[in-house]
Length: 395
Image (cartoon, rainbow, N blue to C red; front, side):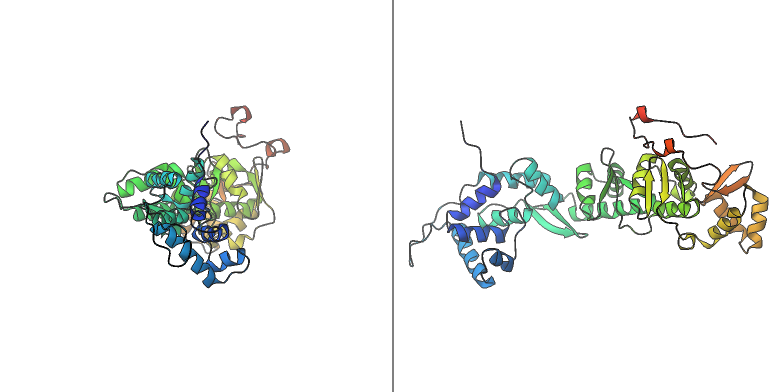
């Protein structure tokens, strides 16, 4: 029975050991990233080797690299004759370079995981070590490492004249953040479609997934359907409206919250299912989700999240124990200094206001009791979870 192929890490370490002592080979492999770890500085590699100086590590790595690059046999002593030979066989390295060529364009992290998933490497293998090994061992480098929008990417080499891969990656990153800013969260498929339409090129979901998931704060809301969230995106329109509603309601049913967000005409693109909105709310600091109940852990200061006109609505409606007729509400608001145009805009679109029928208005979350203990414990149904589905209460 044939013996299993070595991993990429084992193969590269063995090649280094063929021209140097075990200690020197280990230091060089660590510094170059041939262990898959992305490489270590001269200082770090020397420290890990027992306190060698930066210069000493530089010298021994240069010596090991020179022997590998020129194909020299280990020298028996000073003045030994050069014995040239072809580039050493490295089947795993060749396999890894082919995988990189097939994957590009992608991200460094995605390629590292691909090498492990294909069992070429024992674990995710950083492409910097792969690039260095190819150059040292006389292979054609099949990719280029670059940074685009702070993301380490693997680009085709040579460049594909029909595709500006750098611009494609930048557009994906910018589009994803723009969608999250406008609609609270995004789906991979939606980002793919927008980028394809904007650039007029075919875009792969796998590339979009690889790019957006490189963000350090990337969070899945529902991996199966591709919904994700980027907490670092400022001025998130949905998060802002969640905080507005909870600043006056304190707690309410997820369906009520969903309806409040959808009132705003600027959120025509808001197509987030309730269960995804619940997942999003759980990731907002100071907000808790218990079944269908969304609540604040501490009371929110409405003055920090509501606009001046909304504060006026909150004060006037909060002082009434019953819904207020539109004409009366307009009279009270205008007498408080609000303009007619501001009134008409906010009464139609503000998420904190609920129209309860017959031209009457109230603060959202005040016309119905919060979910009962049974409702609060109910899990917001995901698509396909029909055994857990219960219709929302009718008002």
